[in-house]
Amino acid sequence: MTLSIIGAGFGRTGTLSLKLALEQLGFGPCYHMHEVFTQAGHAQRWRDAFHSGAADWDALLQGYRAAVDWPSAHFWRQLAGHYPAARVILTVRDRDAWYESISSTLFPAQRRPLPAQDDPHYAQLVMPRELILQGTFGQVEDKAHVLSVYDDHNAAVQAQIAPPRLLVYDVNDGWGPLCAFLGVPVPGAPFPRSNTQQAFLDRLAAPGV
Picture 1: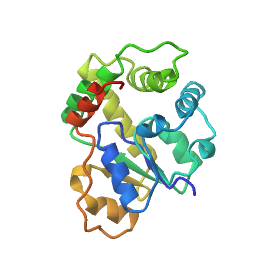
Picture 2: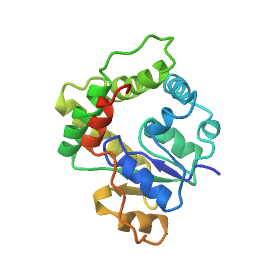
Picture 3: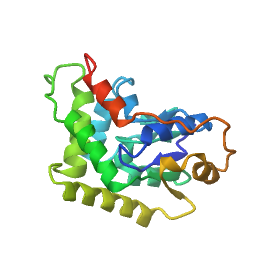
């Protein structure tokens, strides 16, 4: 099994819903940030990739047919080059709605105090901070700056990955565009909706998270 779908969209653009949809369509398992917290050693391997700019992608993503969300979306260029036959899905949403979502979920989550470096969960908690806050946005207090990073990212993906390899996709459009892009029938089940803003906040507030 090799990676056949690369999700290039930033977090909070419906990436978990896309993961569930891809798996329902037979393009799973699909790697997502959630995997970092269930796969031993993966957080440190992503940290190493962030600092070096490279990784053994086949080993890191072994057993996965797709990868969406951070951290893999940060490396969309490397992955698109390493897997030239893989198709790329750029999830997008209304930019102001995206900003409102990320500024009330992911950004506050990355500002929480970190445990000691010898804590077994240290790498899992510091990796998103390094990659998202430092490596992607630089600073997140200025809405105009954050939106500029979002716009520049989306433009870069569309400039480098041309149709028919690329699908620019809003999950609110449901199965139709996704299934047409992948060449599969539309399922009879509803399109999955997951990881709403409130669900993220509820999970963040749970003990031990």
